[in-house]
Image 1 (cartoon, rainbow, N blue to C red):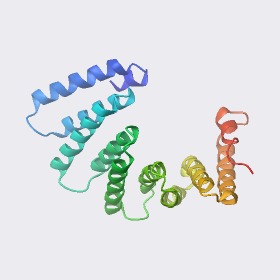
Image 2 (tube, helix red, strand yellow; image 1 turned 120 degrees about the vertical axis):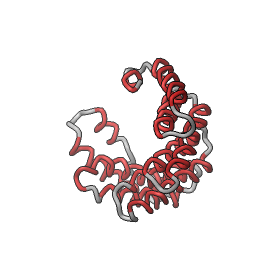
Image 3 (cartoon, helix red, strand yellow; image 1 turned 60 degrees about the vertical axis):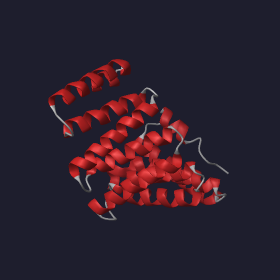
Image 4 (cartoon, rainbow, N blue to C red; image 1 turned 90 degrees about the vertical axis):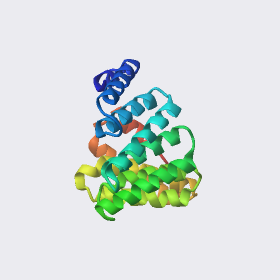
Length: 212
């Protein structure tokens, strides 16, 4: 099914995910980790083809099953919370999405501590929801926290640092802090120029950012 999805044959992949779920439910009575994983994969496939309401129902079912199976903090639950939040964003239910992303961030902090680089992606999820809600100052703080976490990854985190710097530039521009915005945009451009050959489409598009 994953190969079919990567080939763009998502309807065929969906049929396989549905068949796998039906088989697993015949094999295992009640909750089971394999069923939870299959529900999540089915939800992701539905999400990709734009059937977000159905995807949300399956993501939430996977989340509930994982919570019942694990009974405490766990990376799988963090993943499920962010997946539910992302689907809610697709449905423009940003307040609800923010609740899920904040819960995932709090759980990841309990699991890993405040300074772990893996918190970066959770900060970005939170920032995206805050930005969509128009809470630019709070979104900026979350993007800055993500940037700091990506910087702790060293050279391997530079692509994410560049993306995050551009998010920060956008937020600063929306807050009319234009000089700071330009500084972050230029930092993003500089990082991209180190990673991408001259004339590459990614490098060209990056150069179209904020300018005075």
